[in-house]
Amino acid sequence: MKYLLLVLVVALAILLEYIFQIFPTEIENSEFKARYGPWCVVAGASEGLGEQLARQVASKGLNVVLVARTESKLLKVASSIRQDYLVEVQTVVGDLSKQDIVETVKKQVENLEIGSLIYNAAFGGNGLLETYTDETISQTINVNVNTLTYMLRDFVKKFKVQRRGGILIISSLAAVSGIPKFSQYAATKSYQTTLVKGVWEEVRSHNVDVVVTVPGAISTRRPSKYMTPQQTNRDFKPHLKLPLNLFGSWEAGRDPSWYRDQ
Ligand SMILES: NC(=O)c1ccc[n+]([C@@H]2O[C@H](COP(=O)([O-])OP(=O)(O)OC[C@H]3O[C@@H](n4cnc5c(N)ncnc54)[C@H](OP(=O)(O)O)[C@@H]3O)[C@@H](O)[C@H]2O)c1
Image 1 (cartoon, protein in one colour):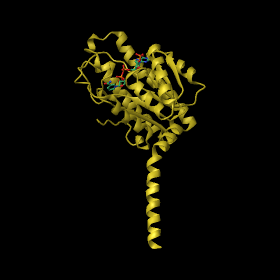
Image 2 (tube, protein in one colour):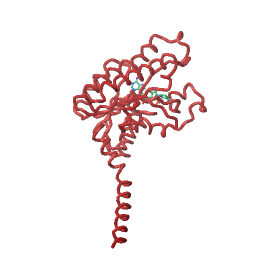
Image 3 (cartoon, helix red, strand yellow):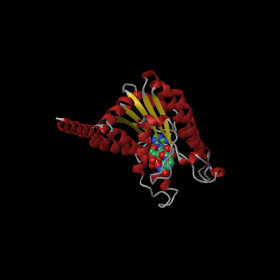
Image 4 (cartoon, rainbow, N blue to C red):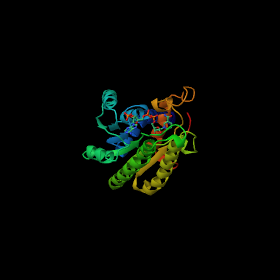
């Protein structure tokens, strides 16, 4: 009888372990969706890191609103995400360096239940600061600072009212120190990182996560214009797991600025 009981307990333990091994991802995904869904806005989502981040949130069951300037690329990504993850996808063709983009996005999403925002797009000049045109300087400030701050403010307000939500800002390792020939870009990335650290503290007690990630060089279209393949030869997909894990994890709140090479 004793042995039978022992066998039953061991069998039950094995069964429970098996069940918990199977279900965590489902529980994780449904929690993720409940906390950050059903819709996520990805600003700068037609290629590169933004596209991959949109794919990752879609793989967790979130519908996505993709924002970028090039309609043809957006439509292609949208249809591929719909097909791969069976979620709904909307697109907003717009320029994040223009002042009216914040209103345009707001209008487009006013009837959607947005639970998260990923601000991914960035702009920056390349070369000595003394050679930058007024246009380069203001476009960098508009995309990396102004529009980002307006959107962050508006979504934080909204998420506080709904008492849930998440915002992920894609900053850069450039934020950590100045970079010659990318000086203004690096400075705006410091702004983003510092801004998030403060806002994270302001909203975390409201069940809203505002986090930033600071990746190093990754071979997407943008850096490949300035760097050799050796400098950007990392496969960017594994990297992207990190910010998204932070985003979806309660641990995210502990250290909102966290870079780990993989
Ligand atoms: N790649 C790296 O090595 C690296 C390293 C550290 C940090 N980061 C950061 O990661 C983020 C993404 O970088 P990435 O390399 O993936 O860039 P990317 O390949 O140039 O892609 C940027 C995305 O944003 C969109 N975008 C750019 N400017 C926009 C604007 N003014 N308005 C609307 N959409 C715009 C682009 O689409 P359209 O051109 O169609 O608008 C594209 O979908 C940036 O914040 C960057 O600073 C990248």
